[in-house]
Length: 307
Image (tube, rainbow, N blue to C red; front, top):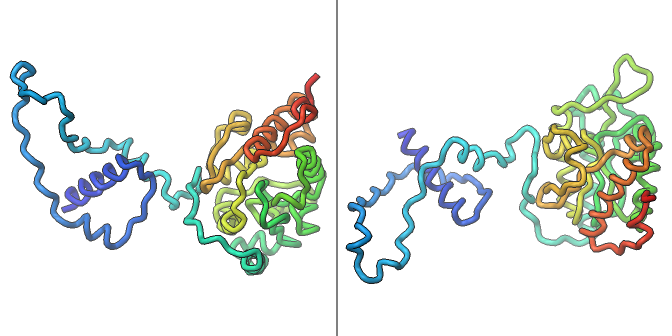
């Protein structure tokens, strides 16, 4: 019975795959249908020699059933499931009908209240000063996502307000936008605790990011930006589960919840390494973002950091 169910599931998934379906929902009705006996496969006759084929044999034959999936094919069908510990390059969530600005604002107010009351990570909740929810336009077409708040953000309750945040603001302005026109958030809404340290920051753990990221998903799904920019290696790891390094990933379009995502360096990296070549790499990423958003690009903007 087990083998029969497994073969039926594989056949069903292969049929979906052949029709271009990449993701599907398993319902009780689907499981019940898979439990039914499989139809007997039609018997195949001997191959007809080429010389004895009747007239009209050049017409396409009925497509034969697909071969059983190999273990690699099975993994490729199931990998995007949302049960992964880190989301990866996720498809868009089921998009609700368009909502009014007032309804969206009310949903954000409710979300903020839940985030500020969250104690799912007791060690973070006990050490934080303020929850860092996010800031910007709820109608933003561009969303920036960092990893976690630092000391300045924890003090003020707003993301990217320290030196790195000031540089991010300059980058946004160089794109011809204002900070109020975009949306800025972090994967973690609380500053990672640093027991025994009077200063400094630490990288959030995968478990902390996994616990907090549903709040970010709600923000993304309510705003529905046209482009997301992931700032730094940790943000990319938290969003995509990638660990091959930001140097190789930056400048290459990815997809997150059905939205184009551009990985780039964190502004803090540019504060540590102020070489014009590194600034130019980040700016080239932003030029791609501007092009995707159909923003006007002047010659001066194209030539930033070029000798």
